[in-house]
View: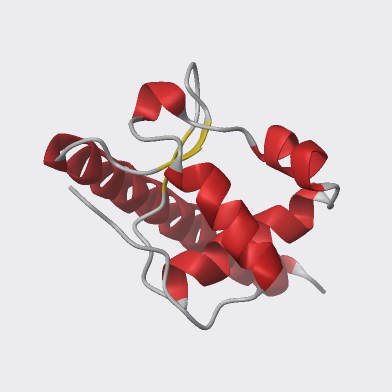
Amino acid sequence: MRFRIPAGISAEETRIAGAIFRRKGKKRAIQVEVLASDHEIDGRRVRRMVKGLIEDHGLPILSSTGRFSGYYIPGDVGEVKACIKSLRRRAASCLGRANTLEKALRMSEQLEI
């Protein structure tokens, strides 16, 4: 799998993307804190930039939690499929929590006098 950093992104985004692109495979993921420290920017800014690189520019940046947490470029199709599966599970869990909170809110509103 070969990927390119697109033209038209800022110099800062190019540096962040380049650092991630040097991390091929989940076991080589780079943590947000390392990216932030290496590039002297805030961790939240790193997350926002990565989100933009993925959603606005279509870069195949994957993320993981746990033992090998951080951002990385997929080493193979299996890593992409595993990331998709993880994202879908997390999304379903978030929706389930939102539904539960909505039910709790409706019940509390009914009980108020």
